[in-house]
Figure 1 (cartoon, protein in one colour):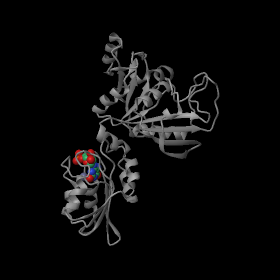
Figure 2 (cartoon, rainbow, N blue to C red):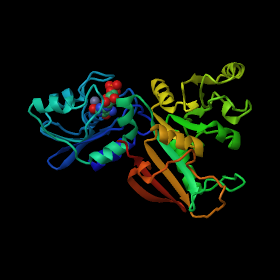
Figure 3 (cartoon, protein in one colour):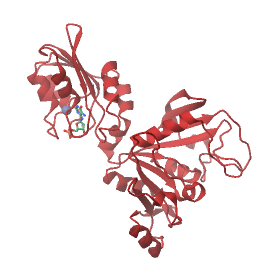
Figure 4 (cartoon, helix red, strand yellow):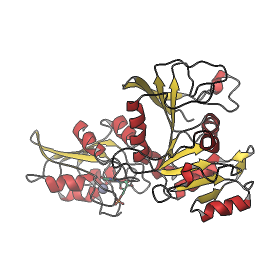
Length: 358
Ligand code: AOF
Ligand code: ZN
């Protein structure tokens, strides 16, 4: 299953919004075939594994990182294929939450008299497909809040300088993540202060759709993010408060405006996520700043946090911290993070975990 998970990972960036899936076929203690879902719309992992088999697979065990599908999608059901090939035993990591599958794949195989074991390295498979697991059920993007801060929790100096707090390795890793996700989101204040491009600047990088939250359309018309629409599309989430003339100017420049309801006097982020989900955006990297980060946490749209901590101290009681907004009164209202892990990335530390939802 570990090998199947490693194979699955090879599909990253090429299969979304489908899951990354790997499969390994074992007979008499030997691996006789393996494969993974390589490209969206193409063969599933099981089919590719069968195709690579070096001998008859009848009586073999197949290890699959996701429950074999039971539906006719772009390809026929893998569950049928497994039965037809006379596989003796199926070992599954995670169940497929896709409403078209969700247990039916396992049932179909069991009903055919084949032994099925589930839950082997399930957490690893769920983590690998964290985006798919949410999007297929809710049709709303999986949101990762990314922060780069100093050891004393500052995201800029007192004069607002923030380039660069973390080192090169951390920054490269973020560009790789941008390339693997379908959207990147900031607040208009970040556009005004930093004038970012929000592209994935790595070799063969795929640019995510750039999403700006700007309830009153304060965005400067010469902002970098409005340029190069051929390289990366920009969507602005705004409200009915926006100036109509400015809206027309932006639309003429090829920018897509999405008008969402207001909440607490600003853009309703939950409503925005629903609209973006309907447009096929399955994942978003939220790159702040402080006001939007708090609003996103408060709206319950954040699924995961990634906090890079650089080994330096910045100080300054007015220097910005990653999460601003109104904040909470009591500690029991804090947003809790579960499954926290820590890894070294160059000279920085990356802390990541999932926002606990109840
Ligand atoms: C599997 N093995 O390798 C993958 C599965 O449109 P289709 O036909 O490609 O079906 C996509 C759905 O199939 C996807 O939403 C998920 O439920 C499942 N993905 N299933 O048995 C695979 N990639
Ligand atoms: Zn399938």
